[in-house]
Amino acid sequence: MSAIKPPGGPGASGVTPPPVTSGPTGATGPDAASFRDRLGAQEAVAKTGAQANVPTPGTTEHVIESLRAGKITPDAAVTALTKLAVQRTGAPEALHAQLEARLREMVAQDPIVGDLVRQMGGAVANDE
Image 1 (tube, rainbow, N blue to C red):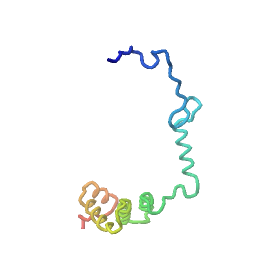
Image 2: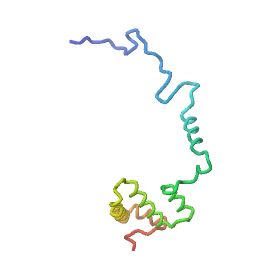
Image 3: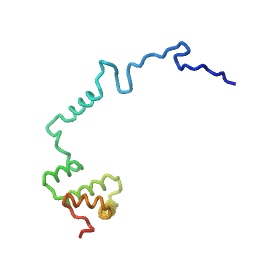
Image 4: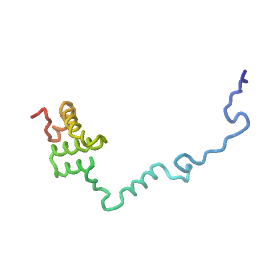
């Protein structure tokens, strides 16, 4: 049979827990940097350098930036994004053509995605 303990929590027995002075991400309190300050410092470090605002070729951001700049057509953007999606699947190279064809089929059948492609000036397989 277990004894019933009185209410009151950890401090009720006369033992007080030590104060928490640091959390999992570092110091807390009035002298500690706020989350916004720490995030801003990380963003500043990430944006330094001449190439900070230039998207890496072969990334989604690069394709979107190229489309916005008029360097590629909407259809070329859809093709590039489809290829990037297939590459990121981790599937064997031998399956890439089948995956790309299936993905294009899915894009053509999805009315919402089809409308988005049309809005940016691209053609959807069902339109042809």
